[in-house]
Image 1 (tube, rainbow, N blue to C red):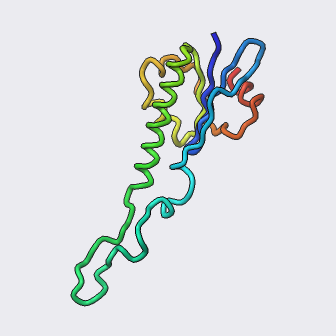
Image 2 (cartoon, one colour; image 1 turned 60 degrees about the vertical axis):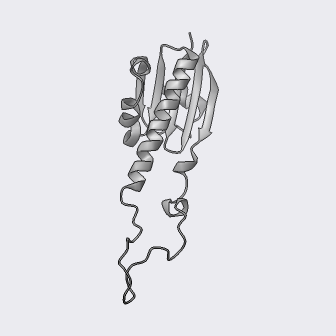
Image 3 (cartoon, rainbow, N blue to C red; image 1 turned 120 degrees about the vertical axis):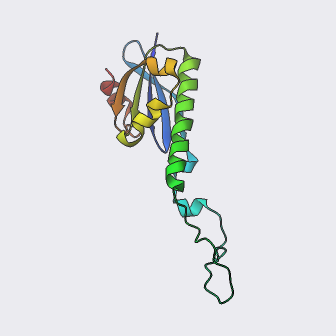
Amino acid sequence: MSKIAVVVDLGHFKAYRFSEGNAIELLESYDTLDAHGKLCDKLSDAEGSFGRGERAGSAAMGSGESHNLETEMEKKAVRFMAKDIDTLITREGTNQWYLAAPERINNQIVENLNPAVKAALVKNVKADLTNAEKLDILRRFE
């Protein structure tokens, strides 16, 4: 049975199949749109629509601060990645797979995995390998 390596960061998802004879094939690859760009570009408020109570007789209003919006967006992206990993590993029917994700999000991804998928994880590398060459990925998971 072939093994699968999933290589992710907040903006990229790549899955590779390792076959006999050290062959590596790209199974799936996509960029997550939510992870790219600045937060202010994603929020579409009109300039000046947040009143600040600066004029006499005007009511004080919020300043339009995002509070924990970036953190919440990151958590949502991690949950979607974990769901995509669950779907991929289940669909491929593999009982051994590998994961590479930056240390910052690695544990969060693993925590959000289906228990059966998590049990099949045989090697977890806390590194961003999304831009690595196929041969480098193969070496990391030998």
